[in-house]
Image 1: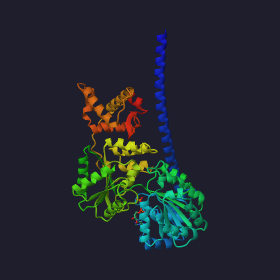
Image 2 (image 1 turned 90 degrees about the horizontal axis):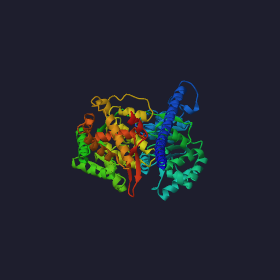
Image 3 (image 1 turned 90 degrees about the vertical axis):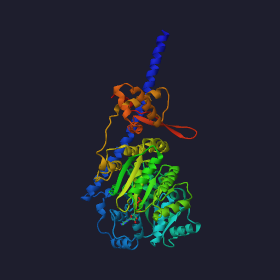
Image 4 (image 1 turned 45 degrees about the horizontal axis):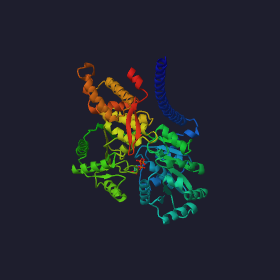
Amino acid sequence: MAEEVEEQLRSVNQELLQVEEQLEQLLERQQMLLEQQTELQCLLDSMCDSKSEHANTIGQKDDAADSAKTWTGTFPWDKEADSALLNIFGLSSYRTNQREIMNALLSGKDVVVIMAAGGGKSLCYQLPALLSKGTTLIISPLLSLIQDQVMGLTALGVAAAMLTSVTSKEEEKTIYKSLEKGEGELKLLYVTPEKIAKSKRFMSKLEKCNHAGRLSIIAIDEAHCCSQWGHDFRPDYKSLGILKKQFPKVSMIALTATATARVQNDLREMLQIRSCVKFVSSVNRPNLFYEVREKSTNTQAVISEIADFIKRSYKKKDSGIVYCYSRKECEQVAKELCLQGIGAAYYHADMEPNARSRVHHQWSSNKLQVIVGTVAFGMGINKPDVRFVIHHSMSKSLETYYQESGRAGRDGLPSHCLLFYKPADLPRHSSMVFHEHAGLANLYSMVRFCQSKRECRRAAFFRHFGEQHQDCNGMCDNCALGGDIAEKDVTAHAQSIVLLVKEMEHCDKKTTLLQLADSWKSRANQEAQGRADIKLVKDLKKQEVEQVVVQLLLDGILKEVFQHTAYATNAYVALGSLWQSLIHD
Ligand SMILES: Nc1ncnc2c1ncn2[C@@H]1O[C@H](COP(=O)(O)OP(=O)(O)OP(=O)(O)O)[C@@H](O)[C@H]1O
């Protein structure tokens, strides 16, 4: 009798365990669906926004949704603006939306600008700053970016200054006098967001400047840094919401090259400019050719392929950038490229600032053909004639990749963006971004881009940024060469990989992505001995098995889990919530 009860108890316990497991899986699935729901709602909102913007152009009046068309007419400052454009900036005409943005801003509107890398965002606040009475405040995330801008403006004879960690006490005094008492001319003042977040003294001077009617415009550069959903969230940007509260009458302009619908909504919310005028230019860069190549597991072979590509395609030694994942890789790749006769030098955050700016300067002045950098070689690069950007490893998100590759061809001439991808690069990336908000989701969108052998690369960008599809004109590998793909049905392989993980989990064994691919391949080959139905396994190369595993991760059938050791975060593979449907299909 007791044995029977014990047996029943065991069975109930077992079923309870299964129920708990299923509950956990359902909760995860719920979380994933909730995130998707928010994402889709944002996308829908932004579509409605642009619909009402369109309605506005054909006659309906809606203050919150003005369109570019509203801002094309004649304005009192036209003459003065045209003259400053030519005589100060040396430019003969406006680029798309620049004039309209200026008109909206000078009419007292708050403005959000999404404009592709190299589109000419700076002019959108610099020109209005010169036409306005008083000082324009610009918040920008990086010291180097600020230094470049102030140097450029000063060379044009514009009264620009910055308040940063490298500003001398003397300069600071002059700037504060100008803000407080209007002494001396100060048209543009650049600060980092920390100044707004942490300096009460600065905020009180700004208050006085505004009180005297001398704070004309507030510009937020790289505004995607406001959003946790963006690829480069900066906590100090969170405090910028105070600006609209404190200076409600001062027009604000927020600018970025990349913002999904969700990021756009987020930054409008954060900056308290919900009823702003939005100017969204296309993310399309028609002159860039996008290509993803399979990356060899042999380090030397990858570098040789990069060197061959550069030597064969750019006989005139045109400028280029090679992005690497780590500082060590940067140094190694630069050294190898030099050995293969290419003028290259590395650039990363571990270098002396002087050495870094020397390398940057040599490259900018064409004394050096290739700069091999980490992400530290980032914002503020405005060399127009970069003919190629090569990624030795993928970026951590599609937005980051769009920005980095977008440094090619800012002059509008044909340029090449080449990315080397191998599935084995995923684990080190994922353990790096795991702690970031939406880090894994952003990384997976990058991996989807790399894994795809069919979809137009541009279409992936359009979808990601919620934009309508435009013709690629054969300017990506999948459109240009898409016909030659050999298809393999890997359903059976995928199912047996999932079963292997299930078995491992049952025995409480952990496995990394690469170990899993390895152990599955050797086991499957053993099983295949003498069995016709699983012969296919032998057809798969190791990289292809890894690709199948990665695809299972992207589809949520497998998931990455992370564990801390004393030294590192290790990524393991576990079963995701959809495994049952895969097994039972
Ligand atoms: N109207 C114009 N006519 C010709 N060139 C222009 C015009 N406006 C801007 N440019 C040039 O385009 C280049 C890019 O401008 P800017 O640095 O403002 O781009 P950006 O949109 O801020 O790019 P990023 O996001 O990469 O920083 C600069 O060299 C600038 O002088």
